[in-house]
Length: 82
Image (cartoon, rainbow, N blue to C red):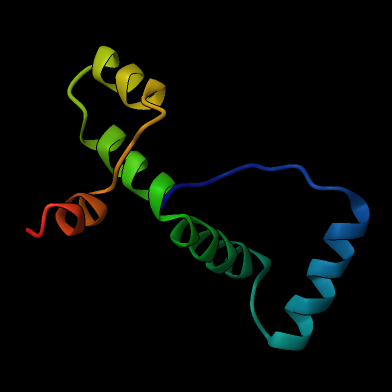
């Protein structure tokens, strides 16, 4: 696990504390769950992130980010009946 430091406004913090108490979960656990859910929603971005994590160098990463016509593996396979 990695430690993450973040800053949130007072109102959001108080809401998180209340939810944390009611659901008997730590704020950290709620943030991990929420972030995991957020990251799993956008399949295009998820595919790009996967490619970035697998990229060998900065040039390849910049090409992935600059590619506006990105096609996910699933879309490619569907399009070409693979």
